[in-house]
Length: 176
Image (cartoon, rainbow, N blue to C red; front, side, top):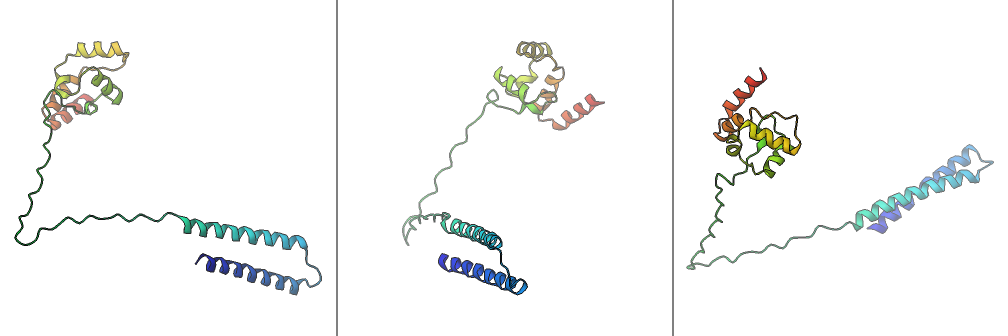
């Protein structure tokens, strides 16, 4: 197949060259420049090289491997059907080990949330149980001077109670 395509490309190049030479002879029968012929051959060689490269790349690309499928043995007539395996038990998370997305609280970004997790605060309930002074002390100890955690305990209490509408209303009141 590759040889057929390569032969076709060579034939096209020969035909194009013969047509070019015939036109040159008809137009200028007296003089043919060697430079023009060299330039044409260089162009044809480049075109052929690029075509050959594309063809070889296509031919040599790896073929996708076929995946072997395993067929399970089907029980015959009269044989008992095996029971399906029991699902794996889901781990039970206690309230203390629960990790909430603290970035849902207005004023807590990813860096502040990471700092709070390092300090052991991972849930909305833990954040709601802290006072503003404790939060400010923790932030100042870590070098966070600009952040104001005044409303974080209230927001966290609403989030811990899954009162997302109340949290949205609270944040709207903060903006106004």
